[in-house]
Amino acid sequence: MPLILFSNRMHRFMAVSATACLAAALLTWTLWPWLPMGKDSRPRTLVLYGFSILEPTITRTLFPAFRKRWLAETGQDVELISSFAGSGTVTNQLIMGVPAEIAIFST
Image (cartoon, rainbow, N blue to C red; front, side, top):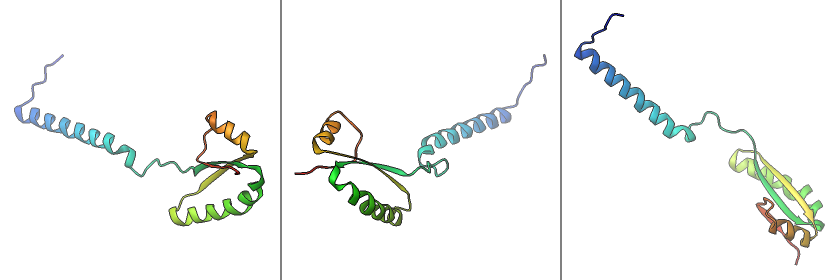
């Protein structure tokens, strides 16, 4: 197998090229989370737990108005998930750790 000898100029060029490639890879890796490509197109999800008497009002009036305003202000869709029951049930569910961004209780 022939031995390939490189001149100093070639060594310098290869070292600079390798350094530049390494720097570009490091920069890309650092900026990756903020790059616009590959953004998730799923809507934002908000989970609401509330007492049952408010279910018709919230699902028919409040949710559609909130979706419309959210889209107008952010340009993103929002998914609203709700669970309605008696306040004691909702309280117990929240204490047990159900994921909820919003909870509405009766007094």
